[in-house]
Image 1 (cartoon, rainbow, N blue to C red):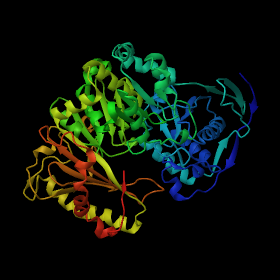
Image 2 (cartoon, one colour):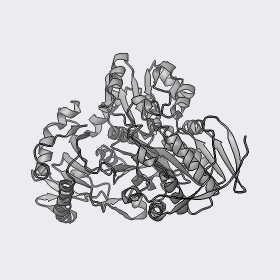
Image 3 (cartoon, one colour):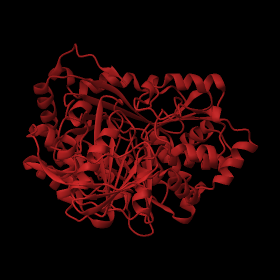
Image 4 (tube, rainbow, N blue to C red):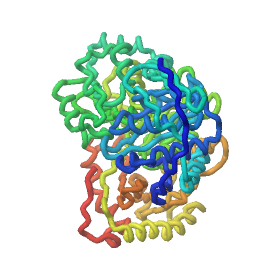
Length: 585
């Protein structure tokens, strides 16, 4: 414990370019985010927007390059604004910080993270509100507005905090008490997970059946280690890349089959029964079974929904709702169609799931999207995209069914059919003018078609409820036809819209869907990144019914024939030419 007398002072800030302040909660290039005054500027704007005399604030990060510097600078701003206590959880995940936020009754939390971007290239900030969910949109919008006109910030420049030790330091800043306490959310997170899963049963399942599990921690957060080592007793040799490194040891922050071929080979060579790569921030994952059998995130979401009673948490808090982004396969819809579950579609992106993270009483919900991420929430738990929770859910299903990952997945396909969705193509560095024209073409052309579909007819096709407003009416209600159906994704039923009766509007027109047939659809999405706005992503999905002879075939072999057709239907080459080479994801 230390005591020091310090002073708060007002420091003039800089005038930043408009595009940097258009949304201060988007990620930036690391050098931009850590430029003089920027961290201070956005932290001060947030404090003004929150508009409360905060007594306790949590700071955390995903441990990447320069994230500790950002936490130190934010700590000085909090001290200069009369915050009384700062809890510093140096390296954690959104779910674990959410647990800490609720347990300590803190006012809000700031997490410095770059998400799925490389460790040294990007840095940004997430803000969580007291329930442990993303801060309300109106608060963030207010902070963005304040940031545009902010001329100065309050700071305590001489404050020096030891981020290395596990200490509590007490200060006096402008005659007011200020405390910085080093904490770890890992033990609390493990305890919360122990209330959702039967760790003893899972440990016995792994040991008694000689199940080999390999977990790659991607040199990221420590939250998984307590669970793996102490609760499940996974052998140390089966926990890879467990040391936290600010560059993640050169490993990707977004694990997927293309970026982690080395892991797939390792699983095959070492004959592991279960393998998972967990992203450094604990949100994303790559799940594989014996022989390197890859499980898609959409299948994981659908299987968890179908097998929810294998998970102790859902035995006490029955699963009612699924939420997925439009860029997720329709596998969850198939489960909902043959059950009492409701399945809603939302816009892509972490922030759009915020209201879904705190559902109404007596409801539990799972949500997921194309980025290999699944989360859960209920009236007494507000989760986030959480790879560790997903691993524990899978282990519960395997322990209950006594089957392998591959057997569980393939039996699911034989029951519901197989939905294959891949982000096969990324077109990068396109002409901004051409891309604007391309997206406007969809907006102008398909809005007209949308009105026809909305009324129930398009050509010789009867299409019921294109916005999933009634979850019992699925795409299968459309009559078969050779004529393409196309419509833009304009209105969405919000995940809580079923309860609160309101719509989310996609006013940016940055994403469109084309239904090539009853079984095949294409999704076109413009990148939302401030620094990479000229990237276009193509998603292709095909549905194979349980009797289809291709049910067990390779994913890319099944989808490959549809790529040229998709480019033709979208008139892509008319806008960009024939020499644009895609990046095969």
